[in-house]
Image (cartoon, rainbow, N blue to C red; front, side, top):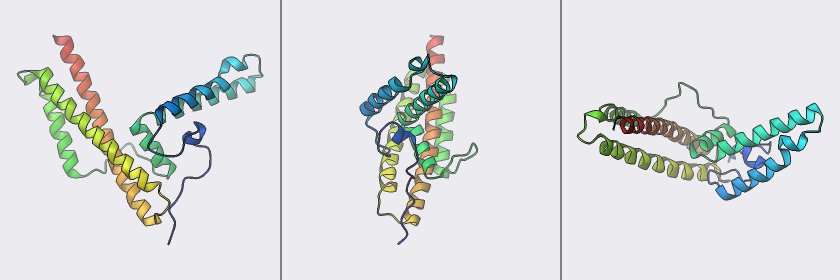
Length: 194
């Protein structure tokens, strides 16, 4: 039986912030570890140090900030987890099922015609609730997929199939997040018209 490809022991954002590699994050521990690390490398502590030490301090502080921003949000965390397995999402990567794409087109069309509704804000709230529900479902699916992917008893083939499913789910979540952003911008525009 071929064992699955594991994430190497090299430095990654999880180990940097003292967390296990997992989709599930203890947000309190994430923030506590972040603040502790920032205290030790904050550039102010290196004000009287050499130029090289100050530069290293600034670089480490930036890396710690990047790690926090990546791990605290489910979409960014998912993309990062995929990257740890060597899977990168391309700019033109849109390998999602046609049914999902059709739903997205219908939601975008409904969003574009929101001003024609009798109560545009109420119609927009319905769209936002729908998108929020879909994002929550995608997060739940990713949680399950990454638990399976990180399990020790997978063959390489099983892991490859699960990673492909996770990538497809991440692509869907990217669509949904963009749609949510568009809807929130539309909400702001409608509020300004009142």
